[in-house]
Amino acid sequence: MENWQNKAYEELKEVIEKQFGIYQKIEDVYLTTRKAIVERQMKEYLDKLEEEEVLWKKIEDLEPKRREYLLLLGEFFQLEEKDYRLTEISKKMNRGDERECVELKDQFQQTIGKIKRLATLNKTLLKKELEFSEWTLSLLTKSEKKNDVYQKNGLTEQLKTSLVDQKA
Image: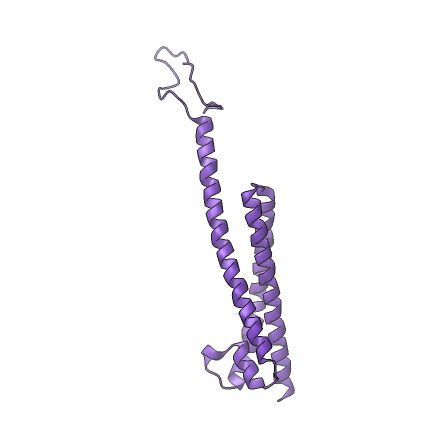
């Protein structure tokens, strides 16, 4: 095997392992985000949103390099484009690390699956929290009387409200 192929393969593995590490951090962020939503810690929630954005940006920045190495090695080994994957390239490299690559792929898929489930759960929790907040706000501002605030003679009428006057 030529030296450039070994170097490209090692760099490809390194990029994929970096991406995997970032995905694991995203999973941790989603877990913390869920906790912040449930405990109504909106400052922490907003901090986690910023952290998540930074992590997604890092993955995005690594992606062109990953694609470049997959393309380079995939074309060298004359693979079909659908087989431009680390596991397929590792088979062609005959380095004996195919099992390691398959394990990394499996861990990657499990982590991405967890991230998807957590994202769905967090979305649902946010929606329910918003509904609860709107319901609470409606209880606080709900008037028992549906009439206008002003009488015909211009004097204000005393309204009964739950806790907070709507004009407050």
